[in-house]
Length: 158
Image 1 (cartoon, rainbow, N blue to C red):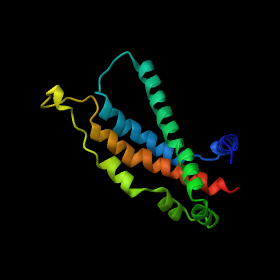
Image 2 (tube, helix red, strand yellow):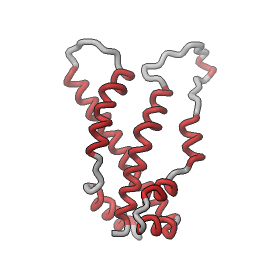
Image 3 (tube, rainbow, N blue to C red):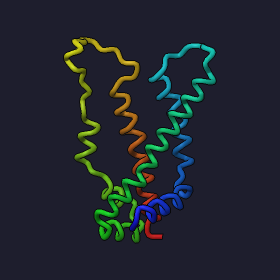
Image 4 (cartoon, rainbow, N blue to C red):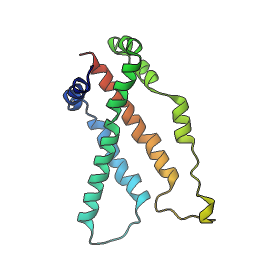
């Protein structure tokens, strides 16, 4: 498969992978949990700028989640026979197992963020807690990315 063929395949499938129910759930979560964690509540005259930033943030998250199609294709190319059987059987659970690397996830989500001792900071102050970002990825970004990967693979042989 050439790069051009892969690109065309991904583009053709782009509009068929949607998550309207999940997006509504994420949207609610975004405003009820994520925004309050990232910003202090106050009245200001910057609502337009804030809305633009919200849109940019949500677009970036969507783009990051949909990069999962490229990851799924790369994994498929590594072991097509393993994936083909699961795809033909429409076995979502097996596809998810094949896509998941528990060792990598344990490392990624188990990392402790440390401040370089050269800064000599005893009680660092964060605008956004590093653990919050890790939780965002573990609870939302990665599960949605995996759903995109599974949906992509289920259409891979069409």
